[in-house]
Image 1 (tube, helix red, strand yellow):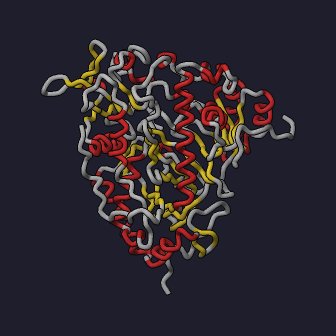
Image 2 (image 1 turned 90 degrees about the vertical axis):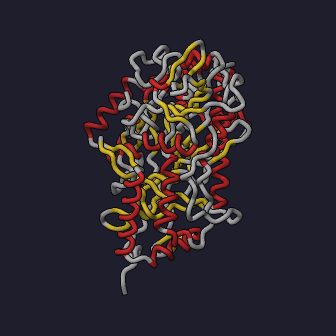
Image 3 (image 1 turned 180 degrees about the vertical axis):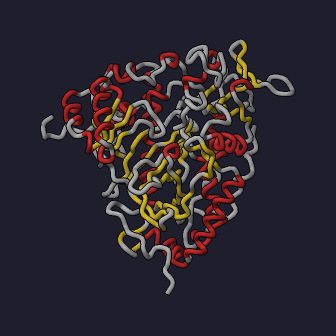
Length: 517
């Protein structure tokens, strides 16, 4: 009898998303397991080659180590039950609302400081805090138009928030392209499942951007997507989203600011711009106020925002809420602003400004994950159990020199999922990035989001910029229509020390320099 795909699969010693044990699929994965077992290795390999050719032909690429390559899509999807998604979605929405309230507060009344929920020094000492954002009031009260929370599942099966991404979260284009590829190349995997569609993300995003237009805009606001250019690692996504929304993709030299108004240069003359969906970090947006040598941004953008003639999405100043030390206070923000208990817990985290916590952490660097508070894309992270002695010594010195610049987290043995690698199908660690869009009157969460997978064996680093791949993420819903096997996402939307453990903060209940999250 011919071997089937999962015969040799070894279930990991952490939570496996597909199998409860050897040969025993989880209830939501029974049909998928059956479909996988019906494929032989030769046919499976041929389908994977078709996937790679499709991605290459369509330009679905990502820049890694200075080279452009097809974005790695693993063919075995990650499945989330309808019941679990309801809880996860509620947790993401709750978190976005609390962070919106926090940003509105610190750039306005600063009541959270007066009530001593969050220390003022947390914000003022953050390298991501921008004083120029103080007093800026967004047109519809929204600062976090698009967010991408990073969610992980530990060995006990509990979902936790690893970090928040509120500046330029990337990866949603791969969600849509992954679904397109899977429905065409592995249609039998969808048999017996009712999978919530993802193809309406561009229309939901455009709705949010139009709703955010300033009061001075016309009834048909002009929306553009501002990219740092073709050398950015996520440039494919910039072009993809602009095309799908039917808006102009622009670079800094395509725009100009005059008399507090932003204009787009066109062959028919200058056109007023009302909303900029920016994929450029704050530092490079406006050389008059931020990095003066920036050639990526537009001089005067902040003046246009202050004049009430321009909305920038996401808002200038959001970075302070991305600070990983700020992250440790989000559960307190939820209780303070919303009067609720957090639906999703933080990963157990230590604030290293506390001398007792710092001494405890410095004695256990080889057991923890150390993160710089202002980095993104996995940069600077040290995973203690995998690090050598010189690396641990260096990070220890860095922490002692600048405790505010680091946090420490417990190592979370991320859940695993069967993943195709060169050696066959093996367990690899994964996380999840759900994307939430705040439209003012509601927060819409893309069903599923981007499941990222750490391709090297044993690695916990899933970031694309560090060599990670992705999986199609299925949210099941008995009341939803079955996934469309020929989704119409090609068609743009019509629109213009001691042994005692210290208390953790919360426990589970220029283009080259321009980084995307």
